[in-house]
Length: 104
Image (tube, rainbow, N blue to C red; front, top):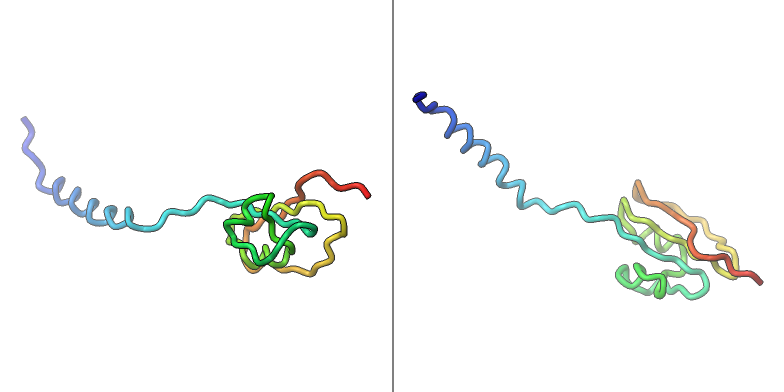
């Protein structure tokens, strides 16, 4: 039988001491999808409400100010073209066209 090493318990204790606190760090949130509709949207809606295509925000600029990095903004077709100047303050925000275009 091999003699037990004195360094193994010390190493495991140190490893546990270093890794255990990491379990209390917040986890990264998954990417969320928000909706914008120039016809039926309302910028007074909450971020929770705007995650449904039934209760979207009205403007792309408002959406860009509200979302976090990694989120997606789906812009639904509107009867009137969007005429906005908008700038994202966060990296890695995706703007995407969604829905079926309305015909006049």
